[in-house]
Image 1 (tube, rainbow, N blue to C red):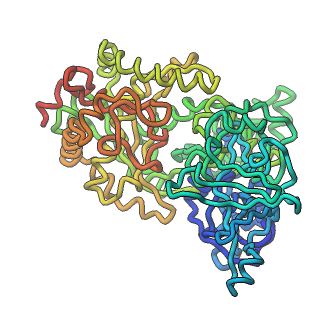
Image 2: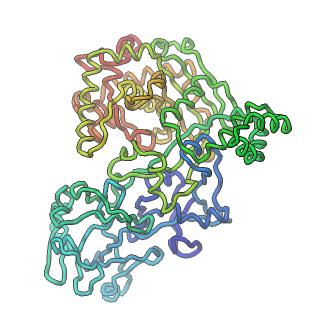
Image 3: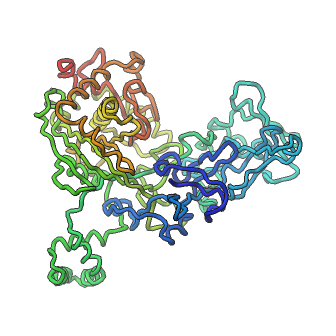
Length: 617
């Protein structure tokens, strides 16, 4: 299990340790996130540069996934450090926030030390009460949409814009909580110079603007301040609680490991003779070189060409997300390629199922008995998970380290899954209905308003994605009730364009969803999920799931909703009907509308399954 070394961030073996599960490194506690060690210590997970010593010593396990490496643009993938009793792996971290206060007397201190093993105590109160009174961190921080984060400007706030050294002995600030409403207005800063001010209005968009505060460009996870002045408008800064979800959204790329059709012998020859082939390629004589090397190595020249091209493009990310997903989609819909321990699956004809909800709407079902999933950390965002969507892979990875690295952190898990492919003709007929367009228009308007407020590029929602995504949630919740896995243990992977983008027309035939579970120990491949997709079982699960989706305990409020969730991009969807745990959804529980699956009270034809739903029930 990974752990924090509570001593020097670059040195292991001293101080107190705090446990951290490996999966959390790709979730709430990724690089740039704030981790609460205990009531008196909070730290920020350091950037990848801080792992350099462990990488050089070979303490980090290498993860094999050539396709993902090419997509991300790296040459190596490493698992997070594990304290296995031999290597003593540790996750580097730095103290943050730096403002702390005494819970007894309220006096505040600013501590820049990156050593988190020493808990700071209030000398006066410790002496008075005959035992250590430890300082606790200020719980408010300032977050910038460009990824920067800083301490709340205590001195600047209490002195109405005057920037004073936080370590000044002439200005010592105390923190008091007045009243009992627990609002920010009840928190008061008072300086020894006589200045006094509550935090009322600090979390409003104009709050920091009034004191002339501007983004500092600080990057605590890299232990530096950005060299370029931040262009963020003051009104876009946010004062948030350090434990809030929007402080750090991990940017993680997932990949289903597709078995490599190339023989290991071919790849070995390509590795050994790569320099020679590259030289001949530059001279324009690649074909002759391939023929000669293939003959000497007793391998197929075309296989050798493919192996050479793959190796040549390692570390060069040029594939779009939709292209990357399409490779997996083709494998999942026709899982003939099998490799024990990595990928084992079989296709099931929809006619083997008795339910019309499957026969009339589903083009194919694949049961994947063994599924290997790799997840790689490529960056993070603050305030909104979509800020990285239009960035290149190199731009996304830039936030993880001071210098450009040819590796990143990843983890690999083994499990099982059920893949469902929709009938394209049925989807197209449903999408052409005016009532469907009317609901998507509401969602699109909400998204446009959110995008406009962020000065981002407009994007058009794909109705088919909303339908498939909502179907995925409804079925995932239904499967979790019978398969032996909780909803938090399951995950979805939607194979459909979320937005209608120019230049991606060739992938418009991709309409499927994979519901899977995976774990590092391999316990995620015990067969419970695959059995749920078998003929005779899947029909009952689907029917029951749809029946529950027709009525939500929050109706009619839920079904009549005009916008919920992040950016108001959900319509009829709440935790009583269509929302799943955050770990289960790859889209942050956005773009969901139960009405597009089961219809509404006054317009049943809005639902994709409405024509056969009630007959099936």
